[in-house]
Length: 110
Length: 116
Image 1 (tube, each protein chain N blue to C red):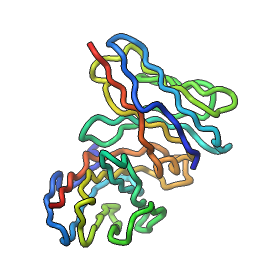
Image 2 (cartoon, helix red, strand yellow):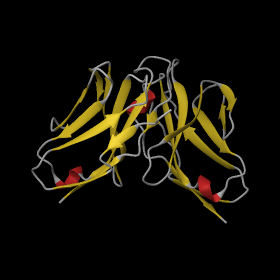
Image 3 (cartoon, chains in turn yellow, orange):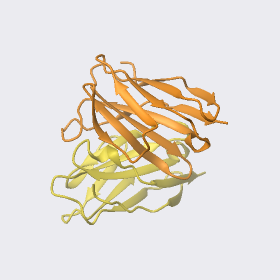
């Protein structure tokens, strides 16, 4: 499984865009990039997954450069309820869930 | 449809005892994974079961074991409990196992185990 590095924490304010970058230098050809969100005392929740370029859904966008050695999760116009831990996972589909890492704690302030 | 159900939600046990936790996956899902989450170690993978077979195992001692039944429900057992086993135990279900393209894992709310 590819090792990932992401910031430990990030602070933001309501209405701002939050971008979390994850480094994965040894990503393999078949690996996908997946992001999960976790609120306190709850299980993680799938946010988005991508292989290359850009993926967008109703809650987030995922930007992946051509070399795929990093990726950026973008949360548009965050609210207080977006305060959570965000995990970046890299691996072949379904293999990724073997290693969650420490995640990035995002705190949104009013 | 119903989500992943874990029982019990909270549990207090004494050192040396054993405990069994239960996980009912989403209907139709055949893969169940178990995780341990503690403030110091984060979210750590325990094992994964698919069609009653253990497919992957994390780096945990043999005191941690699991099984999956024909209806995909899974149980996790921890024997000879230690204080350090106090954690939130999460299970997740998905359609496919590792190496397949059915990727999204749905997590339950977890069982909070306290060992005293």
